[in-house]
Amino acid sequence: MAKHSVAMAKKRWPIMLAAFLSVSTLTVLLMRATNSDSCNTNRFAVAQDNQIRSSAQIGNAASSPLNFMKSKLVLMVSHELSLSGGPLLMMELAFLLRGVGTDVVWITNQKPTEPDQVIYSLESKLLDRGVQVLAAKGEKAIDTALKADMVILNTAVAGKWLDAVLKEKVARVLPKVLWWIHEMRGHYFKVEYVKHLPFVAGAMIDSHTTAEYWKNRTRERLGIKMPETFVVHLGNSNELMEVSEDSVAKRVLREHVRESLGVRNDDLLFAIINSVSRGKGQDLFLRAFYESLQLIQEKKLQLPSLHAVVVGSDLSAQTKFEMELRKFVIEKKIQDRVHFVNKTLAVAPYLASIDVLVQNSQARGECFGRITIEAMAFRLPVLGTAAGGTMEIVVNGTTGLLHPAGKEGVTPLAKNIVKLATHVEKRLTMGKKGYERVKERFLEHHMSQRIALVLKEVLRKARQ
Image 1 (cartoon, helix red, strand yellow):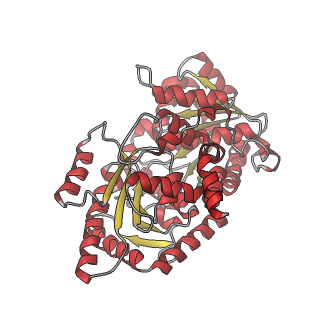
Image 2 (cartoon, helix red, strand yellow; image 1 turned 90 degrees about the vertical axis):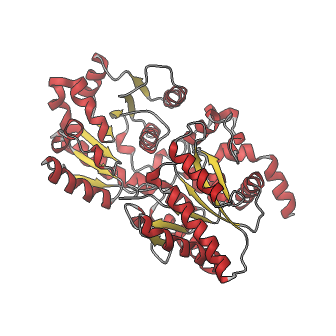
Image 3 (cartoon, one colour; image 1 turned 180 degrees about the vertical axis):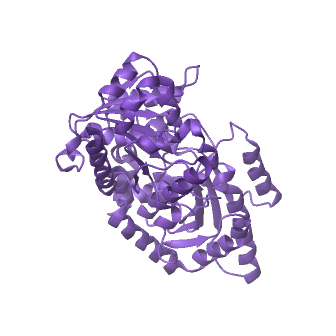
């Protein structure tokens, strides 16, 4: 009977993914169907993407904490429209608001002069969901900003739009601006970006660590004071949670991805899922992974074969950093243990197929790191840097293990890899505890409740 269920699931996996994956994920699946690398699950694309509707918008509107936003006019201004975290989070909020009847208008401040397939696809998705898309400049943009009940700026860089477009009318709009900030890097602290911060209704930031950093940095470097700041932890979409809780779907995805990678079912997979860049720490992860293999050999441990999976590669770009990673793998002769996967937002197949997530972001770490709570939803332990928002998600020793950022974290990470590879029960228990933590505080309705409190306060200030 079990075999029959799995066989049926394999036949209907396109339907399952269509039902489960978020719209943004499906959009990327469609756009990346022609990309290839050592493993490409993008053939999971579903032609009926435009017919998919999030459960956040259909059926759940009656109980949404955002119901008070019905018939309100909200202008969203994003610095760009891309596959990066900030714009996609803003799109997700736009869809949640549309689900309760909010009139949402979208402006992208920076666009390339040449036609861009990603922007075209994402704008089409916005329009399909009833979000009006306007040009960044012009009388219509100004009129909408003046009439709107609320203006949401996305990321620090979006601040450039205020003066460039509104000019002398900017003071009339600032009291109803909510500024959603995700950045943790010093080069965003420029006066031309954030000089209006003290005068907006509020700032919304994804973690307490990032909020404290912004508070101190703006005061010390720019001499300006942050407005009232609201910390809003993110939550997993209902669709991702459905996949994570469907054992048959996960089994099918696990078998397919592992077959594509050329690894066995009992091999242990440690994956880092981020865009490949030095700040995300893929280089230090691979060094730690290599060191863990040496430790296993030195101690003569009898373990399943260990593999490292780097999801977020982009060989077509041929960046210097990417070449460094691949050169390291060749020099250490671990090509059979390391797998590079092309960048994709379709994270569910990989989360279903791996055993441990490595969140190795460097310096100040992630502002939040949504992939961390997504992995925990799949009952995966997390090996993360003791920095940024990761420390507000991972309970060290309970849902995962933390290690220092930087080169000094390589050996501790290597030892943690060996520890979780050796102790199966610990690995499974941590995964279970992580899942319980997600259910307690990192679901879509938790995020909606937190955002609702912020929006109510911004509306109150705007009316004053």
